[in-house]
Image (spheres, rainbow, N blue to C red):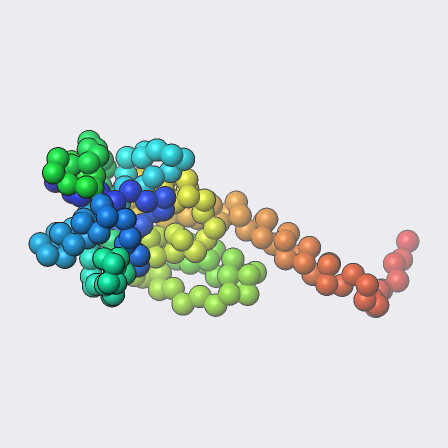
Length: 209
């Protein structure tokens, strides 16, 4: 399905279900958000990576106007709805200050996957190494989106995840990433332990040759 969206390119990746707080200060985006508020419209955040828009983004809904400043700036709260692929981009839209374009909405596939338990096991191992608490629920819908920002992906990798259409593909992508990163994190933790021990008296067992 195609639709027209006002567009707000940003150098970040937003996933469906994710909450995003934004400070709106540029006149073009103040106009865009004001119209979204007045007309209860959605807007799109196409990813802007390495000085270009590779094509995918997320449709957003403004959930609340948190604060409006005297000079017209705003603090808003928004939420990701669904993923789209950019069909065309027009900057600006005729008669407007902001950009817009036609987008193709990506069909929502199965939001659950049998790989959730394996992904959770690796998350627990990573967070254990980092001594960080985790309270994720692997049975939740679109589990991959909920943890994607919390596993050390680069922006390019976060974008690649956004382009994957099934929850199974996304979870397998994260499992492979964690398989790659876990030995590195474990080595870092061992290095930190050795640094802490440096300069301290050590009780060493004698070696038998």
